[in-house]
Image (cartoon, rainbow, N blue to C red; front, side, top):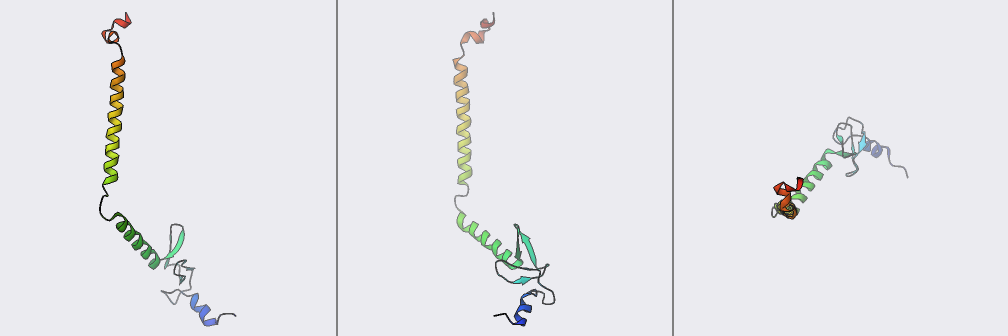
Length: 111
């Protein structure tokens, strides 16, 4: 059956500005908004309320997952790994230099 005319008209009017025609529908809350009330974010149209709730959810999840503890551990592990790699490079360079015969250092090789 077809919808009554009154509900069809109500759906095509902005929820915030009842005197304006709706330009788009928010894909999350499924409500209609005018061009001023809807915004494009990450390539999709979203109303301000849904965008705000997404930002709050993302902020809350980040804080819960980190828990405020051990956030410095990855940086510390990277620092330790960098020091070990640098030490290994200098150690191997020194071993290579020690393999060069003493006559090379004396300058007698070139005579």
